[in-house]
Length: 479
Image (cartoon, rainbow, N blue to C red; front, top):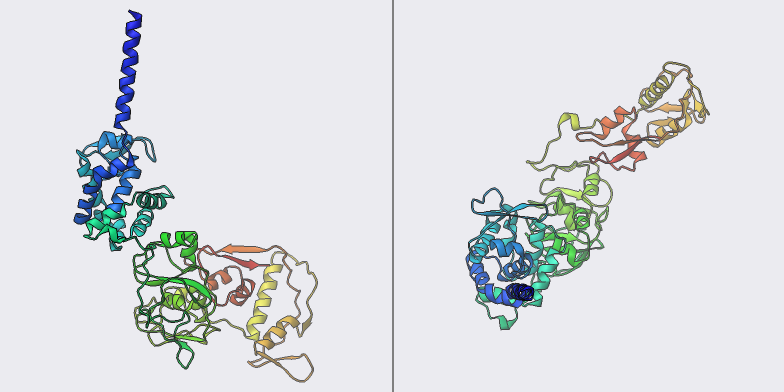
């Protein structure tokens, strides 16, 4: 009797294992089963058949995944707020997350296409050519479809290993035997042989750039101002450009003065190296519709340095026809475009006062502050003439505010001479270094007043060429 029971148990286990093995299908079998659905959906929605099949293979483990077997969910799409159908709980990024349940695989394939079309963050994908599976692969990751960092590479490998591109070509009415391999992914602007120029661009006789927003650039890598760059079409995937060049995406964003890593809204130059602080020519003539960022990209100059050299603030744009300085510093800001940002009065910095009277008043104020509440402990007293430190007199001479006559070294101001200053104790020298982290809406002038410093001091201590500062920037305010 016991032997009979044992044999029954063994037979049951063998049969169960056989059933499990029968359920496992190969990747080739998955492709053969669902390729027609992928072709049908591409013709209906525009989602490349190669991408759809590759996603299905990865998301379902070639149709053998638990979620797929229990819910016909081939693309790992979660419930979201818009789903009103059946659901199932499944451990994914978090425990017991809600996933959609479909009546059939056809419903899942169709809903995947509709899901991509209905979500605005995937809209840029449909600007790619249907054959450009690499842009789609990187674009899906960039839009947040998957959390796996290597998701694009996985998709591309599956497509190339199993020649899934042939189903995209069939859906597009092309002959797969003609090849049709996808491009390298970066949608470079097309240029004719006649339009291809050297990277430095055309110059006029005044040594100014004539390049505007519509200028054409060579295909592949070229140089601008000694920096490597490529020219890409609107909607190109920056994460793909970075991956092709073995770069970090955040570096690519920083090198190009971009706010984020979204696909560019227009054709543009993308630098693969950090841009220079100055241009390789003296000036740039602004054409109609050209922004400061356009100029910075066209000339290979960092945007913040382009602003500094032209006495411009963030948000300000030059009017067409204005000449921007690329090497050196402009004597005055250019005329601004009509719709540019206008600085509020509290954001504007008053002109710095370099007169001798102001210098002496600053010394008095500093001495009064150091001696308040008790007698100051003087350290080494700087050399003085007429009560004014010699170093101050030398600085005023350099600024053209003081001349000498009569007795050597006797200061005489070119402006009305101040009354003789009574001898005062030398200011206490502070040895502790102090920094300030720039907060929102703060200006260099406001920070200088906060620490009883002049704007010129802060500019000198922090190597600032102008008054441009950024939120979070650390400034030396005392030393």
